[in-house]
Length: 212
Image (cartoon, rainbow, N blue to C red; front, side, top):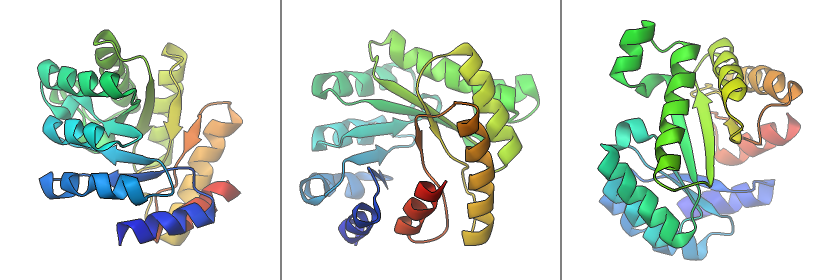
C-alpha cells in the first residue's frame, strides 16, 4: 500500500516521499520500501532514536527528527553518527505540538518566538555533533504563527527551510491555508522546499503544491 502511494506521488510530480516510522515493525520494512520506491524516501522519526538509526541503515535518503523529543544528547549523537556514516541529511522538524517544556514555560505557550528558538537550538545541536547537511522546518496549524516563526528563524540563520502548514485540514481548508502561508513566505524569498499537508491522498498534496 505504501509503495502504491509513492508511485502515485511520483506520477503526480513529487520529488520525494516522507514515510512515518512509528515502531520497529515499520522500520523492518524500510529496506524493501527503499528498494522498490521510485522516489527518495524521508523517514519521519519521533521519540525513539533506535528507529532513526535503523532507518539510516535501511538506506533512506533523509531523516526527519525533532532532537527535542528524540532523547538526550547522547541519543541524538547516535543518530548523527549513523547519518554521517551514510551521508544522509537531516531535517530538524519543529512543531507547535511538540515544543520543549522550558520554552513553553519561558514564552507562555507555543508562540512564534518559541518555535523559532526551538528550531535554532535543535539545529545547533546536530551541527555541534558534526552534521552540516541540515534543513529546518517550523510548522504550526495556523498560518500567522507559522509565517512569523519562519521569518524569525530566517533572520537568525541561513540554514535551508522546508515550508509547510501542519495539520492544514481537509481539501478546501488545507488548500487555502497552505496557499496563503506558503505564498507569503515564498514571496518574501524564504523556503527551499515545500509540502502541502492535506487529509487527502498524497498525490493531491503534490498537485496543490505544484500549483502554489
